Length: 336
Image 1 (tube, rainbow, N blue to C red):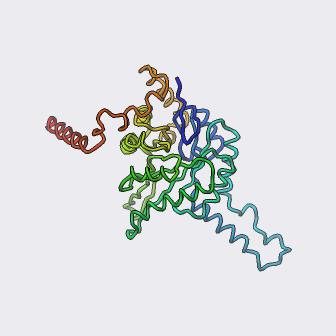
Image 2: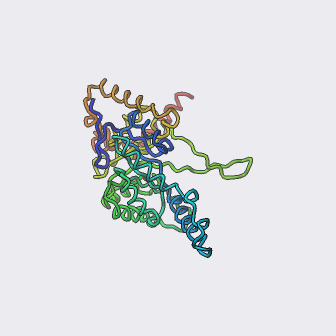
Image 3: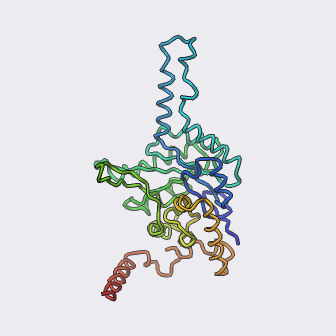
């Protein structure tokens, strides 16, 4: 069975990518993901705040002994006290690229186009095959216009694209008023791929402590429908690669994403729950589904159920919404 796929101009042995998660925080974890069958790996994210802290800490350490005797080595910043987060990240990318035979994709998580562009260059220099920008921005300032929010994405994309030559993908949220147009404009601006969608971790409240509870929740298969819709709508209408993210628990979700038109399917939550070895099950079940239907490659199924290829494009529009509600009402009536 030919499971080979293309993403961001990269050749992958299969379409399942291990997306950014703690599983890629160590070289042994990265090797386990590869051995379990990942077609590519997106490194855990380097946050803009980490870079800021490093720069601020380094400036502080350099200034901390300037008024003391220059000859006194005790006033020189200790190597053990120097910030290591971003530097360790870059070192790990280099080691991962050297130790694996699959694409390694760096990940930057930020909200501005300053302070992290140098790290985009350094991620490229470390050997990363591509870069994913996770622009995790919640516009809580109610005075901010939608155009300002959108422009931030284009500014970051331009700044990064101007600084690196490796492919660049953007991981988007689904909360734009016109997500299709937003993706189209990013495509025209030169993005190499879009990942649909980011999961914003909305806060919960701790009723005992009366504090905001920021605990994370892993995704579930019910979350597949929103990215499934937009991948099906966008397939065949943009040049950039389409990566599906959210809700993958089994090969069922992988197949649906591919039928919608995804070039690749990203997984993290299910690997956090069941372990990296679950990749083997996803791939085996995907191959079994294809074989049972006499397919010989993913090319034959990718985009088959997209809006572009649909016999009834209205199935993705308002008419289907009405049908769903009518079906729901009938089900309730039968139960009553």
